[in-house]
Image (tube, rainbow, N blue to C red; front, side, top):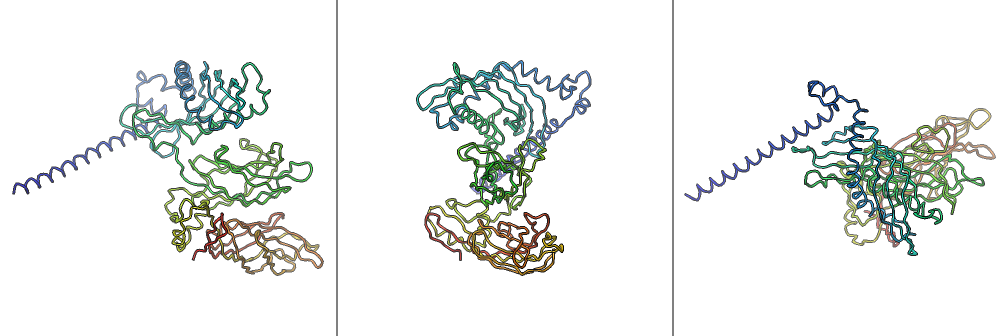
Length: 575
């Protein structure tokens, strides 16, 4: 009997402790939420709100300041404490940037370190401030800064020949925007657990290198290599989305660290009407693509010789770290062999404009400089297909493939869209050799009609027909000729056996039929990306090389993916 009474009392006491602990935790959580909401509300207060809360005789002078007056006050205070900031910041910069300098050290140097680093006596000046509303807990502030510095920075450079060179970094001029993130909000002063800082935007960075007691120009290649190294180190160490975390209250802030959030698949399809940079012949274009402009994160296409309308059809995959602010950049160059390549034009796409899991097919106008909004010169266009795949995309089909299979995210999305019938075959393949996925199948192309085709005959009409082919196949088909029509109707279907759908292209060329010759009217070049994903779709496609005209097509895909071992010639089909 005593045992039962003790058991009941023990259970009751345990339940009471659990309930009490849960109530205490809920109460603490509620207070934290209230405090976070209060702090967030204060961060949104305007000067007028402050004046309403505080009487005139109790309102501090800085509250009634305008934005410019507040910046002036902030700059004055920063100037006062700058000697102390200089000491602390110099040591922080040295310890954090020096390993990055070593990482990007030119191969012509044996070592690259700081022998002296102080930021000088001139404090930076803040020229703008703003609060960023992103819907997340915490406070995000951006400060625009201008700094004409007089630092004392000396690099200890040693060449492979054992020669030591003290190189001074002089005449630094910097303008940029720093982002400060106060997060998480907590219920103890100063009401936030940590501060993250990052260089959100670099508007200007100028500096000069000088060998102490000599001229750096006397050593060929050293100056350019060091400048690139310094800029890469800045890009890799503090430029957004990279951020430095300073704990204010002890705790675990690993969730604030930079983490990949997804992958971006870019298909560089083609370019057209590029500016010719060569005096003899035509340009030899190639493309550089990147999200972050670091040597190990930039991708280069193959060079297409002597062509102002190159077709690449190449895939590239990038890691995305902040889809709200990052962009993908493509720059087209003319390959001049041993000489420095000449920029033809560049273009940029903001990742937040992409719909996750959906392919965006886009033509971009090339400009000389991405910072210049107006560029009236026609430098050509570049054609991209973009697919952004967040890691947390809920409707994404699980990927049955293991990591040792080398595929782009587009290839993985293609293969994982299958009904899973091939997963058993893949699981039986234990080889760790590099493999690639081939999207094999049958492509049915229905040429429905043409609209507003250019007139090629004296009577203002044309006798159009279409020649269809695949870039990687010798198979060609031709529609019938429709006499004297600029809006022909064909409704003819042709089947292609496609051996590698991810890397093949459909070409449709339109001709005007004459008795003794044919006149070229224009063409459409299509990748198979969209039909591989949707398997059945209709679309209208403008004719390239023509003043007007388009083709209406219906494409249908019947897949049969296979797995090919790239080190051997073995091929396994999915059954």
